[in-house]
Amino acid sequence: MIARLIPLILPLIGLGAGVGAGFALRPDAPVASEAGQATEAAAATDAPADLKPADPEPADPENPPEYAKMNNQFVVPVLEGGRVVSMVILSISIEIPPGGAEGVYAREPKLRDSFLQVLFDHANAGGFRGSFTDGSNMVLLRRALLESARGVLGEAARDVLITDIVRQDN
Image 1: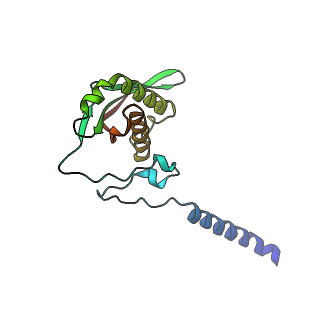
Image 2 (image 1 turned 90 degrees about the vertical axis):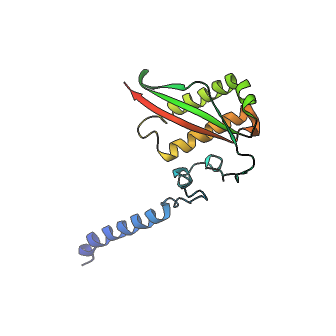
Image 3 (image 1 turned 135 degrees about the vertical axis):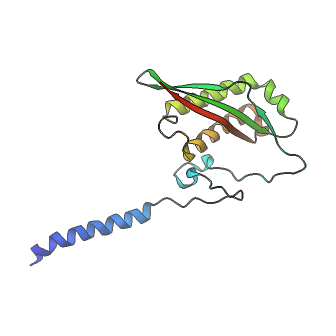
């Protein structure tokens, strides 16, 4: 009698364990920010806390931020098997306090070098393959660029904006 029930009981135990694991391991729901946007997919992933989007600073209507646009675009090759399979072209701006653009342009060569290193690392990690504009990919890239900008400019770099991005496949 028990030998006939075992084929029925084992699938039910497996199903119960699968459902329980699914509930226990599900990602958190995205949290909406004050601007009405989701904090992007990185908030729901296991990204380290320092790579999650920071709370936006309150806007000062009397002193709006300034944006320093990098003079030239960034061109990043995407390699597979030692061969260039596509090129990614980005335009980047940096959010700074009012009157800080001159300091950004004075350090632009150092900033470009630092940004290119981050972009090449991102490309080598596969960040520009597949759905490269996915929210979690963009959050990680912006955070890495912001850390790089703060390494050169200090706290004057409030944010990094990717104003244009395009990938051209061969």
